[in-house]
Amino acid sequence: MKKNLFFLLILFSFNGFAQEFEKVIEDNSFLIEEAYNQENNIVQHISNYKFNNQNSYYSFTQEWPIFSKTHQFSYIISLNENQKFDIESINYRLQIIDDDDFAIAPRISIKKNELKFGYEINLPISKKFSNYFVNHFNFGFTHFQKSNLEYFIGASKIFILNKNLNLLCEILFSSSEKQFTLNPGIRYAFDFENLQIVSGFSLPFEIKKHDSEKNIFLYLSFEHPL
Image 1 (spheres, rainbow, N blue to C red):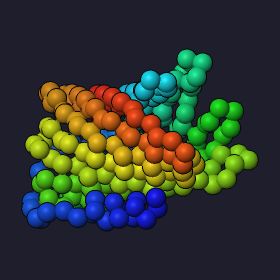
Image 2: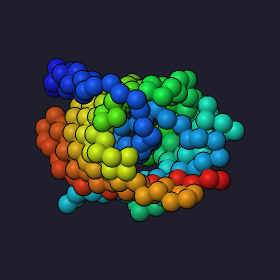
Image 3: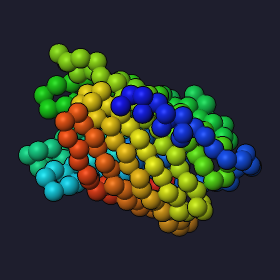
């Protein structure tokens, strides 16, 4: 599985012809984290809902800039098994690089898992190669109390049909459950004067050590000035 993941990452790194870059949808991927902080005085509200015949998962995220795009605070609230909302993580992200075609924004998080607390570090890297393709890469690790250190690695390729309509394909491997996820999807941005709404849909296919699982994933984001 690790060898297959390596070749998929190589494949996702290949792109077409270099061009001047136009403004496209940013920071609205599904499972892979894009390396773009919120702009100053812009807040984003994100809802994720994943479900299948047996299980479901809902989370709500808010992202806030801290005086500038350099620093970003966010938190994630999710619906637990008892159908009650609980804080899943509190996050800080630093925008180290934010060029026209290249961005890096490492994140550190305090996480809660049932009765355990832990931390997570992720390194998102985003690279634009053309007006038709954008790549995103993630590498990070998570550690909870009295648990082993777990890592995750992933990548995505965004196919830009136009500035409002994108196809995407994400791949993600997590060592915690020896799980590999392939996630093809689509997203569309509705642009208004002071509001952008991004909706999305994907079909995550999760391959674990002893079984596999098909899911449906729904995404909805609202982004507006403070």
